Length: 361
Image (cartoon, rainbow, N blue to C red):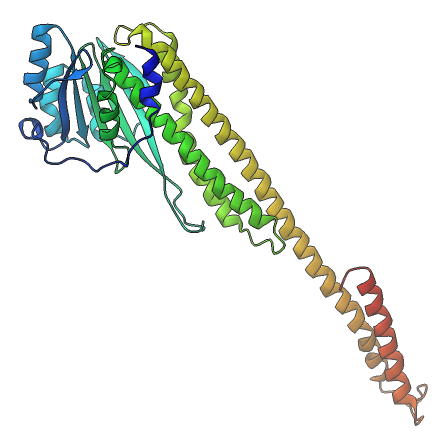
C-alpha cells in the first residue's frame, strides 16, 4: 500500500485550473472556501457538505477526516472554521495575513505548516527589470481528523493535487499527514522546476558575457541575483520543518509517512545546493563581466594614449616653428617647409606602426 505513495505524488500534473468559485460548500462559511470533502478509508464520500456537517459526521463515526481548502480568506470568512476546529489565534492570524516565512509550529493537538510557493515567470528575454520568480504561500492546519489548506497568491492551486490523491485511496487512507506530505512534495517539486528554468537564464547571461561582443550587462546579472535571493528566502527556512517532520514523533503524523518526508527533505537539500551554486556562479559571471569592462577601458586608454603620442610630434614641430625668431634653421630655405612636413609625417608613421605592431591600435 505504501509503495503507491511515491507513485501517486510523482504523477505528471495536469494543467492547473483556477479557483472554483461556484463550489456548493462555499456558501455556508464564506466565499473563501474552495473545497470541502470527507474521506473515509481514503475514499471521498458522496455529497458536498458544509464544514460543520462534515466534521460532525467524521467525529460521530470516528473514521476518516475532513479536507477543507480555502483561498485568501478574510478574518470574517475564516471565523466559522476557526471556532469549529479550535485553531490557535496566532496560527489563524498568520494564515489570514500571510507574508510568513516557511515554518512548522505545534498548537495543542494540531500542526501549523507554512510553505512558500514559487512560480517561474516566463519571459522572452531577460532584462534589468524582468521578474523571474513569483511567490505565494500555502498554510496547512493538520489535526487527527482534519486538514485545512489556505492558499495565498495566484498560483499553486491544489485542485489537481486533490484529484491525484483521490485516485490513490491507499495514500489518503493514511490520514491528514498524507495530505501534508503531498503538499510539501508538490511545493518542493515546483522549486526544482523553477531552479531548472533559472539555470537556463543564467546560462544565457553567461553566454552573452563570454561572447565575442560581451554584451551581457551587469543589470541583468544583479536582477538574477535579486530573484535568486527571493527563491532562497522561500527554500532555506523550510529545511528545519522538513527535518522535524521526517525525524520527530508527532501524534498528527502517521509514522509510515516519515520516510516520504525524508525524501522531500532530500529534494529540498538538492534545491538549496543548486541555489548556492547559482549564487556563486553569478558572482563569478559578474566578476568576469567587470573584468571585461576594465580590460575594454584599458584598451580604450591605450588607443587614446597612442594617438596622443603620435599627435605630440606635429604639435612639437609646429610649436617650435611657431616661435617668433628671425634666425631659425631652414626658415628661409625654399625646401624647408616640405622637408619639415615630410620628417614630421615620417616620424608619426614610425610611431603609428610601432603601436600597431604592439596591439595598441
